[in-house]
Length: 287
Image (cartoon, rainbow, N blue to C red):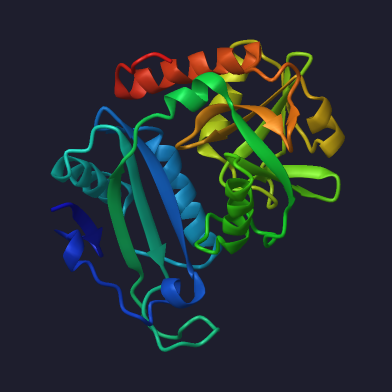
């Protein structure tokens, strides 16, 4: 039986319970993280824990766990479940309190849960690329907080699924923001362009790794708003995410991106990213 963490305790998944008045269940009043695991080791753990803490601070939730305590618990969770390749999902809510829109007064203990899931690398999609659609960005304006309020993202992702596509690329006016569960990057004349990490997008951990790899490998980066027209005219388009890694996008709204195959800059970044994974977590099988 798989084990999960509930408020610092390891329990069988079938025994894991959360109160119906937990504010995460009733209001989405909490935050979460998804951490990739390769060879039983967590990739970019420190960055995920830092973003987790920042999101909690942004919504005013404090807790008693140190970064070291979380690290030890999550590593033990991996070992208890014999996870080799997959993810850890973790979330913390404001806790249990009588239903009221305002934050509860007094000492309310946050609810912390975490579990593992086996998930192989999406090798075929990484090799061949994926299709995407465009959709208007209807989400709230604090997308930098990795909150549980994901209905806008879910609706966008469902539109992509119903269109036979992997991702929905969102936009506000003429400005491209991000995917429903990813960051979006374009390449134009060998320059990598992506939306700056402000309140309109989530500061993706994988994206930040890619931008650093660009800078250390003489690939020019521009963090700026780019338009739907620039997206349509791009030489290459790719997305980054914890589970999608560096994923080529070869078609948008039925129109091919350039020649309809993954581009050379995207391929180079896939190679560099795989080496970064191996540096932290050990050998991977090649694409």
